[in-house]
Amino acid sequence: MRIQSATEPGTPGQPNEDFAAVATPTETGEGALVVLDGVTAPSGDFGCDHGVAWFSARLGGTLLRALAASPARPLDDSLAHAISRTADAHRTTCDLSHRRTPQATVVCARWDADRVEYLVLSDSVLLVEGPTGLVRPVLDRRLDRLRPLARQLPRDRRVAFVEGLRNAPDGFFTAAADPSVAERAVVGELPRHEVRSVAAFTDGVGRWAETFGLGDWPALSRALAERGPAGVIAEVRAAEAADPEGALYPRGKTHDDATAVLVTL
Image (tube, rainbow, N blue to C red):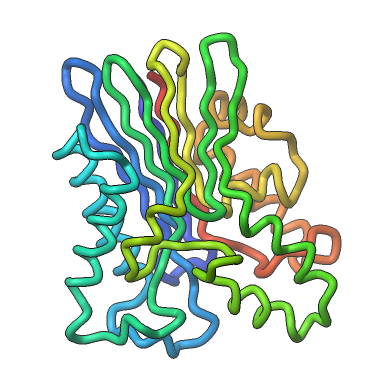
């Protein structure tokens, strides 16, 4: 088993709001990974004294411990548990009812000798490579379906439109303070023998394929294997630097926090 990871803040000197960790595999080949992308608040007012980076680290660490400690517990139930525990850690000091209370996208996976389980919530990505090289992307497409609608609106109304659909019945979902959101996640499992590797990454790395068109998902999976997560992040940074104003490749911000974990089983 080989584990590679890299993370880089979008702005040097600013907190990295991503989180990534892998549980130490046992001798029988068990393990788990967690990758979170903290959602940057559009202003300093989000009802929390701790900040998004604190939330991502707290939620991510709690989720990883839950995955490792209770291998029989379903992934979505483990996520709900982690959300509740994290909310309990700051509900007496912070306004968790605030619409932009700290929150994050979630990708996690857990494997043992027989199976590989996975969960994806919002626009971070998991790529599952099979023994023949076939790559299966695991995606939560709810936010993608809303983006074309937002582009039809005047620019000054787009952010408000998307924000109005965050954690709403007909919108998209991120992990914040409500544990029931875990029921909205994309979950599944595969036999262990059908999985050669899993790659989890935030949308700052997903830009490689989705924004800059450097290749499709299988090409990104190969790039992660050949050049490593740090090499792929460097390629994203080069593409961002070549188009700093977003004239050729429109995006919400020039640079984004970028994190990837590749586990070769």
